[in-house]
Image (tube, rainbow, N blue to C red; front, side, top):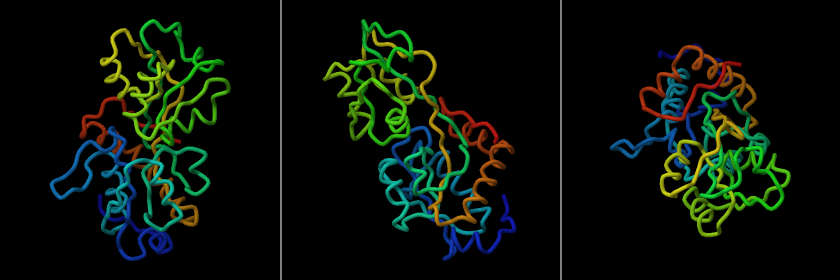
Length: 246
């Protein structure tokens, strides 16, 4: 899409030097699905950032992070102008988020022989749940669990290992990843439904008040126009859906 007429105040906040620095979380395998020959990330997330830069009429620079926690930590360090990350209350203290542009279902995997049959049965005393610490679904569990114990790890792979090695009661994660994990564990099951839907959004540091409002409207337009749906189809991503228009 061609450059739009953008208020100079918004450009001053997002790209004062003519380049939009976009923080990209490399650990989200649904939103970053590959790497270009020059090393740039490929997927829905970088394409969203590129479209925003196009609408601003500026160049794009990807600022890469190994996980969402490190991306969120950089919000007040001046390392990026927009950040593509799950919108969670803890992160909203330093980041102003758009509404979600896509959603990813979060659920549980339980081991063979587990008496747990539903998501409602997981949050009970004595239940231990493996999760990746500081992932959006992990943050949701921190905020909402009342009885079960969280066993947090530094990576998705480590949460799977902890689930198996410590014989935990459930493994929390994004459904597309758990569909793969359940095949590694004979008799294990995925629970129907979801405990949350990870809301993937575009954020900017809270000091960028003018830019935050513009980003909100821009993301809504990208959903309504079919742009986000087209990206999901383009990158052949299963388990990702366009978020409702606000």
